[in-house]
Each structure stands twice: as structure tokens, then as C-alpha cells.
Length: 336
Image 1 (tube, rainbow, N blue to C red):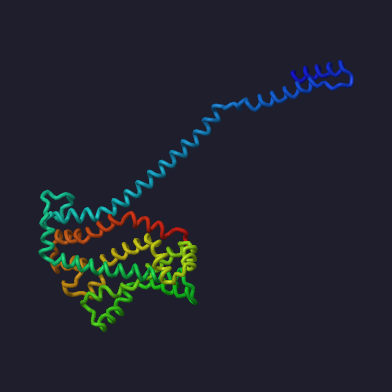
Image 2 (cartoon, one colour):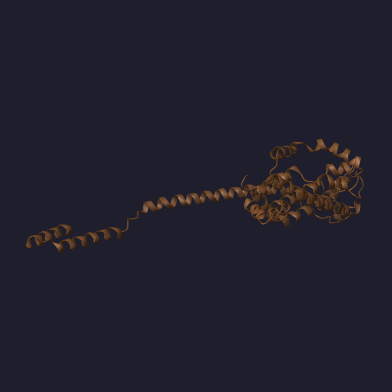
């Protein structure tokens, strides 16, 4: 209507002055058009209540699904943790019982026998055995961390002919069972005169393993090559690049390798059983076997000894838990 009125006014103005354009009419038309456009832009689009409800419903359902999914994961993890804790709790319960109560299904004994732990140290030189196991685990862990990191760096960073073939051949040794190599290793130890000595417990596992080399190689491959290139420009040698530049960045993987190696040496039973006879060099796992009699076993003492052997591992994992989990996550990143 406004545009039509302006057109009529423009026509009248144009008719009043022959040959002269209706200037006022044109200005008025432009003002009306700009005003109508501003009105269109300023008027908000209507929001319907049904549309808002449709948008809120998927959000609620998505939140509910996430809550159910997270709850299911936590329930599964709690069940797995409980299954892992049952043997430990049963051993602690059995270590506090007497010989007559050991067969009873009750978890908490009526009269806890704390003296069973003292009897373990009176029956066996358990302190000496724990010390021996600690020394063996410390030496083997230090050797594994050093030599596996060195081999992993060589397979990941150094270029030489036959590198991949040699690495695959070394990795294939993981498929060889331990029982296959026990007799050859025993013959070597006997030839060297190391049977029933600490050297038989330290030297065979000192110079690395295929798993440790693979773990360190994969972690070295995730490090950026710019670190190595900058070190080369600064004049660093190959050893300096490994020791000063790249190795400090592999602390998460080193922690994982150290914890896994320590646990493996601490729990080892077959090799100490073959090589060690004297209590002077025996490990803690051999102490558990020597508490078992031929005709009768004092189960409260055996369970108390098992708890004593387990406590250092639990303490180690409690201290290194955060670094261990971080190392597991970091050592698998990139998938290269």
C-alpha cells in the first residue's frame, strides 16, 4: 500500500512539472524499501514448542545411554577386580587361622593367629630369601632396561642391512617355550661352574629380552625425528643422541619394562628350582615350596609365607601405579 501511494504521488509530481523527474517520490520509495527490509530482518522467526521438545528429547536419550554405558563398564571392572582380590583375601584369611580352622569356610577367624607370620621366619630364613630375590630382581631389571633400550634404539633409528630380518628373527624367539631352553641353559651353567651360585640367577636374564626390545623399539619410533636431526646439527655422536637426547624421553616405557621385569624375576620358580639348592642363595618362591611337607603341609604357615612374598609386589605397584599406567598408554600410541 505504501509503495502504491508513493507511486501515485510520484506520478502527480511528475505530472505537475513537465519533463522533471519526481525526486521526492524516488527518495520516499527508497526510504520505504529500506524500512521494509529492516523490518523483515528485525522480526525473529517464530519458535514452535514442538520443535524445542524434539531437540531436547535426543539430548536426554543420549545422556541416558552414556550413563548406562559407563555404569556397565564400572560394573564389569568391579567384578574383574573382585575376582582378582578373592585369592589374596583367602590367603590373608588362611594365614590367620589355626591348623584346625583352615578347612572351615569362614573368612574371618574367631581368634586370629598373628603368630603364624613369626613362625614363618623361625622355620625358614625368609629374610635372607627375600634379600636374595631383591638382589636378583634389581640386577636383572637394570640389565634389561639398559640393553633392551639400546637394542630398541638400534632397531628403530639406525639403518643397516638386514635390520628388519634380524628384528623379526629375534622377535620370533618369543614363540619358543621356556622349557625348551632349560636344559641347554643348565648345561651352559654347569660348564661355567655357576650351578648353585648367584651368577646363575643373574647372568641369563641380564642382557635383554625380545619383548623388552620390541617395547623399546616401538616407543623409540614414536619420537619425532627432529630431535635427532637437531642433535646431529649440534655435533652429537650416535651414543650421545641415544643417551642424552632420546633416552630421557623414553621414561614411561622404561618404567613399564622395569615393573614387568621385576615382577617376572620375583615370581620366577622353575629356574631357581633347577639351579639353586642351598638356602643361602634361595629365592622367596623356593621358600614356599620348602614349607610343603611330603605327608603333611602346614597350610597356615604356607599362606602366611605367600602373603609375605606378595606384599613387596603390592607395595611396588602402589608406588609405580601412575607411571606404569602412563607408560602403558604412551608405549602404544601411534601404532607404528
